[in-house]
Image (cartoon, rainbow, N blue to C red):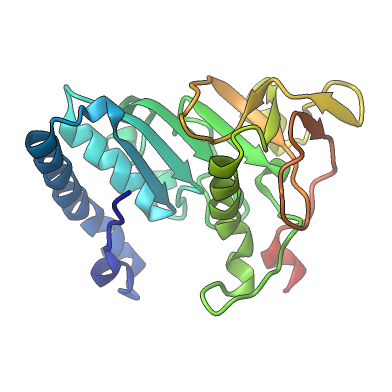
Length: 236
């Protein structure tokens, strides 16, 4: 596992300037993965790029630069949306940026990208709104960003247990926005699992629920719950 430190860019208080600089960061990431490939013969389709927030779009732009080759997987953890939702697919993450792209979206009310056109499979824990464990303030996580960081915790748990987050497939993104997805019962049998390693390709829009304490996943069953108001609304 290799961590990409782009804090020299991300600590800039001018978010709009950071968005412009994403292309430069992606070029450097692309150059590095080409170096790894050339020095070790690791195929590009065996490489996973995992990004959070704006890091998802860095991964996507790096994927565009690699074409016609493709990275194996991009896991997009709560892709940033305040600016990127206004951009076309050439300037942000898109499903064509890797062999398989999966998004985990936990904060569509504030920081997330409120759509389903970023990935082959889009997962919305708790309807992408208030996460049950929030607010959970740490020194690195202000309370109003708790929902935004939820995708990180869920993804890490999925690596430890690929069957932790059973989900059900929804008709489309409107089903998520209107909280209209289910099997007609309080508990539904999972039709797919979110995250995990190795990645298992899926396609479509998926809902799942989580617990308020660790372990967060319910396993092979999906509990149908009403949406919780997002953290930003609960603390205002």
